[in-house]
Length: 254
Figure 1: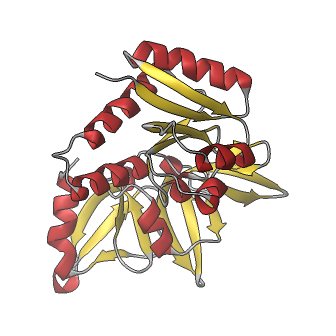
Figure 2: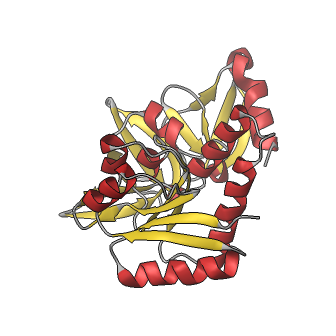
């Protein structure tokens, strides 16, 4: 079996050395084609002939820009695993041919999972639909963190700390399990698309609810359900009769 040809785009020598060491433990036989520290050098290298990588590891923040620029300047015809210390680029990463997104510091268990996923994608029997499903699961495996205003600061708010999102006076707010509310410069439709559908349920046009916040669902007028959440919501959270079955299936499918 021929060695796995790997390209590393990374501007931090320590991070490059760590990843190389981890790869030696996870991949039985690989060949490191190059370590490229910048967008410019990566584009120049990829435009050259030969040395076709089987897999690339791209740090997102490089010394001269973001590695997403590489995809706009030249053809990247191989799968890529992005590495970064920040999670705000997850959505953009999956708009290109990324198969995973690893947060630094990378550990051997995370890397092994990504390599297994890569090997599955290389199997000729794997169809395009399954590839898309794997990429979608990877996208939702990254918890979203929001930067929200608190007094005169911007503070991080992980999505897992949000009990529900709601619209008030046309503005989307996040209500935390600590019963704090923060406005967000996002639409509820965007949040529904970006957050894990196994964790958050779109109850109606005004509410997106975390399953951990749901304490009960009571029958309401005209066959609808009224969700009781903690912390309590000032407004009723109603699910239409037509979506009651969908809600029950979602809630039971833990």
